[in-house]
Image (cartoon, rainbow, N blue to C red; front, top):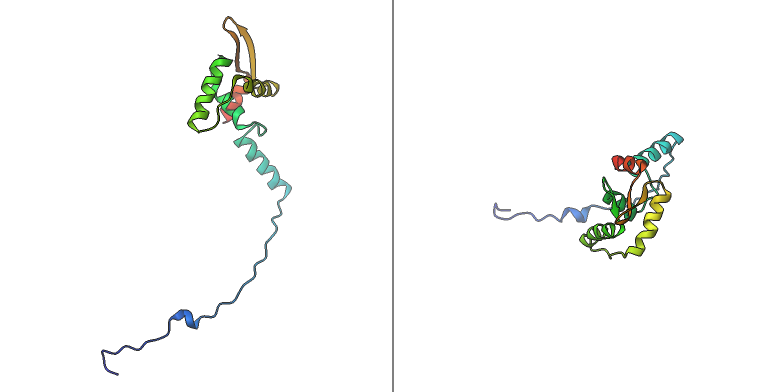
Amino acid sequence: MSGNEKETKPPARDSVVLKKVETKRQEVKLSEKEIGMMRNFEKSINPKGDLTNDEITLVNILEKQKLPLERIVIKFNQSRKALALPLLMAKDFEAIIGSLVSKGLVTSREAPIGTVYYLTEAGLEFLELL
């Protein structure tokens, strides 16, 4: 062979033989202590795990404010519009507010402009945890 000629070798992929390897799934077994730690962590992230996104949004809107239903609807729908979500009507808020009242986070009282809604002490504590 002269210096200009190169030996051609077959590509490496032709000389490699692959075997199929079967894997088994392992079951994850958690101790009671680990399960308790996970529950505490979940509570620290969302202390009222039963709240919907709409309810959490409403709690955030009522932060440090007393608002009539009309203002709540406007502020709430502004946030939904920014996320391209369908807007809600005032009648839809009765169920959301009722749910928050039953959970002790929101209360209401009569004012010259009508009924105003505001956070209770539990609602304010919930906001601090968020």
